[in-house]
Image (cartoon, rainbow, N blue to C red; front, side):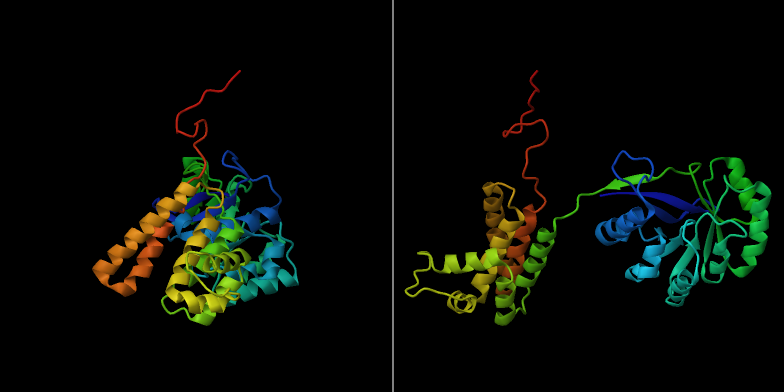
Length: 341
């Protein structure tokens, strides 16, 4: 996942917020994807996966919204106090779009008009927006002051975008603009992250639920039964020679009663970790288990028996971020290898 951000600065050079931009790859310098795709990916990857806190450090996030996203109500997925929804210049303004913006404004969301041009259909949205972005490269210099005189009394904050020279900064500041964005200050910086597979997300959710202190037998049974591989491992293990059962155990509930909730919880956590590391090496699992048991004993000794399970999970998860593959260009022993002709 690649997301770029470009700062929006106030008149004294402090960062007010960041516009978040879609990038197809780490080396891309602009957005070549269709507007709907780019906006949806930023919404999904930047906001819901990477996290606004990481990308904006608590400042406002300006996110472009296309017509489909506006009409779908996707804006309500975002925290109203942390984002500014930018209505892009290519959105066809009609009754549906006006209603969508009116609802977002009523819910406390901040809206911005991107690349605003006087006399355009976007004028109909002015009662609901708090920011207006003016492209200073595409707008005549004398229009900058005209726009400011008209919109500033309405309580709209003006953002001069695509600012590339000191003269542009001085001219727009004199006209009443107090927020600035452009290459003169900073080019967009790209952030790259690897998304987690969906089944890993499910496993982590299961792992967290399994290690809740207040989880009941019914909840534990339901959690295990919803994962086929986990159910198989529970039944196969409880029927193995290790536990010396005399009569075959045929249900998850029977296994819970036989082994006890604590034992099942612990083993299930191990099996879930194995599923998370399915592409890794067995040694990773072995080291994680040793760490888990060590942490459990320490927690038991320092904080009492009730804390042991939590520290077991701490040790168990300590190697989740380990890359199972050798570094590029290295052999199994970690030594660099040379390409052959």
